[in-house]
Length: 360
Image 1 (cartoon, helix red, strand yellow):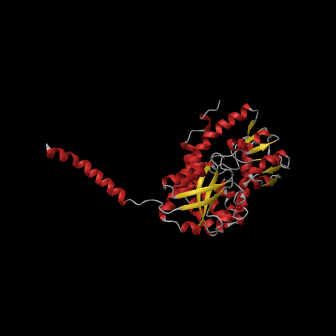
Image 2: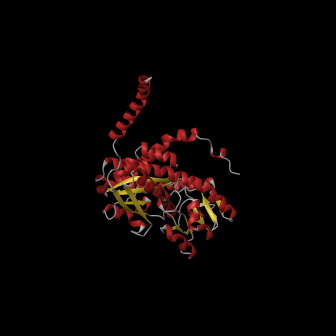
Image 3: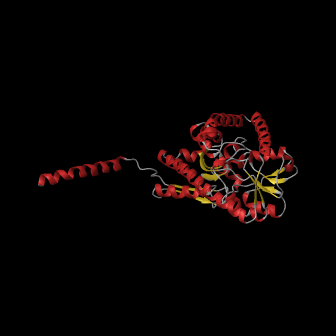
């Protein structure tokens, strides 16, 4: 009986010993202490756009046992939104969380990463970014500025904007004073609009004071947070000018290289997790916002297909001209177009047509 009892415990003892050996031999991730001040380009409550930074900071602190802490600051508390890249590049702050399209005047290729007209939808973009050329090309772009970039949020298409009048043809853009970002702004300039770039926090006042006639900013739920529906009741969709929107964590390259490999891996995984979390939050929020708009008398106009086709033609010409002027823009655009052409067989045949997903 004694022998049997002893033998019966052997498997448990062996298992416990193996577990202890595994725990002891396993590397401890992120043992170094990281304390970063992170300025934001947008307010931290914008669903899917900046809320991922909260998920990132909380997850990193939890997984690292409190060793890795990112403290984020609202726009303007540390630096203005348009100055985040320069502040990180110079080492003024170790990292920043931003919409990289703000720096298109310095780096023409960046709007292709922040959200481009008639481009990929989020699933295809993620495939191109992680499995294709996207990530490597972006790292090459920022290497010259002493920055390590990480995709840290992705959401779906924006609304095409808030207009006082409906858009029935391209002629309706003529003479409009409009806040419009990215390559879409250049497209509207080609159509005779007067395009200006106003930070998100100032759009409401610009509309209220009639300094602009129309504006785009983001998705329905985010636009509602800014109160844009309180001033203009005509909402244009779909977001032809940005089929997706991304945010990135930009880290000073010297700071990044100074981290232990385990810490770098942890932060990279944190951004991947934040990207997934933000996309889920965003997709959850949009239908509620649109249905609330309907109850409040906001007209969500869907642009006719002929208008969209004409916009696409103008867009392709604008982007071809940009590619002729900037080699990196051309490399990124060519890579994206090649992948979209390759991916189209799956995109077109693998998914149900949109009208199978019925809207009442």
